[in-house]
Image (cartoon, rainbow, N blue to C red; front, top):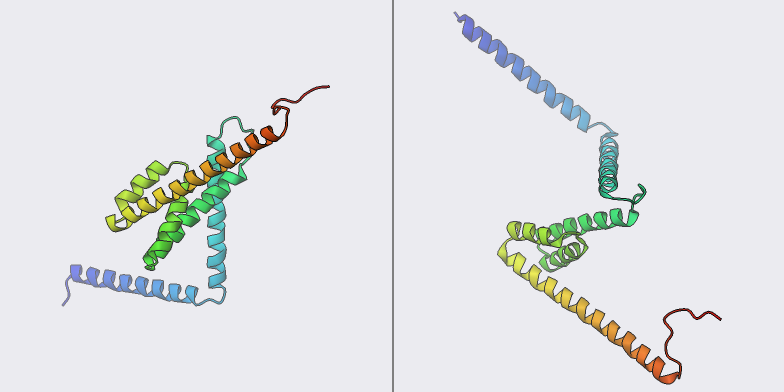
Length: 177
């Protein structure tokens, strides 16, 4: 004969098994529904919109004296930053390291606080990936600085050549007649 404790244990085990069976049955039925993928897609869209609204609200709270208008350029920059980081991570996971590092460099250039992002990347990326990332960043910065100095030199040359060909000095302020 079974003792009272073993009967309770048997009843509890049976109830647990029935509950788990019902959970599996319900999950199977839910995922095999014809509109399941559509509902999942709609839910993900709602969550993405809610995340954008949270970012927009956070930006409005941080903004001072802007009249409450949301800066769409800043939101677009944040979205592009997140996309570049995610794309870089995905490409690195796929083994396309050069392309992934390019996307991470772009994300670092878009970041409002690149120092903190670099510290986070240094802590999380292996040395074999972080070192080439830093080299690529320095190359990009050198290219940007050389292109800026080239454009400054060209504009200075144009100003000096235009002042040399005309006898009048360049007027920086409007002249009133």
